[in-house]
Image 1 (cartoon, helix red, strand yellow):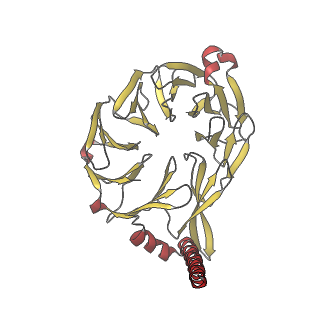
Image 2 (cartoon, helix red, strand yellow):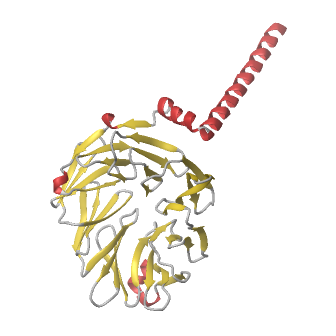
Image 3 (cartoon, rainbow, N blue to C red):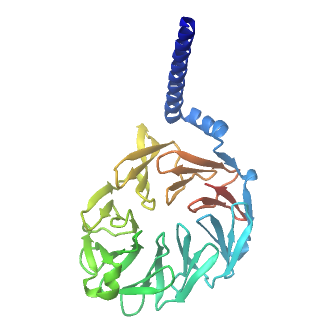
Length: 387
């Protein structure tokens, strides 16, 4: 009996030691993965299989002579050419073909929705899951489009009477209201995730000093009591021009200006980030984060590059090291950050982890990113990546 107890005790000790060794080994692997670039690249390539090459992917053939416009949304790659919008799945198969009378498109996507309008024209379409949900003609010339995750569309339109007119539609195509700006130009708009608020980024060029404003408008009051529909107005610092708006949640909008990023809400305003000369790319189109690529001195006349991903709500920061490589462009969609280095494309999550890496034998022309799909665009084809 005592021998059995001793043997059981030894087994328990061995199990504890084994678990302890496994934990130490995992800590060592994680620490080296985070700090050793060569080890991380090898681990991603051979263990996690994150590295992709063009021969192993689904492909869409395109004719560059037809001047195709290529976009991604939801789980589809779309190609617009000769007033025909063709949707493809991840294996390169045609999923749907839609008649869309657009020559030069303005496009935005969000979740399952794609809004497409004629640039400086009047036509606009809302598309979801291979269907045209609605289409209409607008009075004036469309200069900006936006859609939220529920299919609410906002448009910035110019005409001969007002500086800007903002149209807002629900997902069924019902026009909810229009807002007329007689003194300021609307630069960007966004509808909140609960469909209750509209944020308008405006610029006033009439004074000696340029001013930008962010108006938070109640969608309900804009329909029933437009004179009292403005819930809050944020005024920028002197000389600042607003460039983009993205709702962080139902109440707060993240707004990007020339030299800073500001969180604007009816409760309080908060500086998120001050843009400086070392920042190469900044983007606010993630759900809850801003992404900044900046350079740091690593010696005399030498620099290293890194991407800082900062949560707007929690203030947590994640770092993704680029070392000596400078991307040609950064594209952000939802929680995916795409870095195009020319012959290599990296897809990174907002927690700072590499999702997938694509290597090419020749220069990548363009990259498009949807919520769960991406396309590597060349002159004659599109390589498709599931994310």
